[in-house]
Image (cartoon, rainbow, N blue to C red):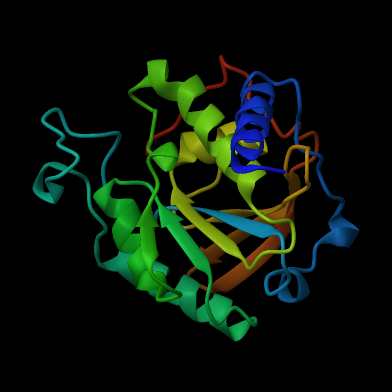
Length: 222
């Protein structure tokens, strides 16, 4: 398959996913085994940035100026470091790490210390930019479609609304959703991972999760 055809198929799948034509499947509780799945090929950990006090983006937000943005506090930085430690302790020695261009996401990704961090605009928040929702999801799902089904772990550090749109449910700061890539289909939701004060916990996907947030679904702070 030549490069042009691969890219065309990737964008076609991206549009189908963004418009809800294809929807991720949801795994059952008995299928949740992060310890063995994380080092395996073909998985994606979508991680919400660690704790950053505040709500949304400040009025004078500038993408290239972290002083105008919400940033991680001490607990957020500790949360990101702990997440990286937990992942290494469960067999993830390195990963392909991508991040939203927001400073709080980039810092979270770097503090994981699992590899070079590549900014990916498709992971940028559309919480206050709802007109960018569809184009962002098209780009992100096309990105998924281009990934090898047996490639090393992908870690995508992003925001609540982005995870909600892909998985069909949201997560708290520093929590993540594990997906399994499926060639030609939407990613399969495997489960949820959170990093609390008492350590990491894994959970099955919520009952009734559809794998796709409705356009009118309520949004939460980013």
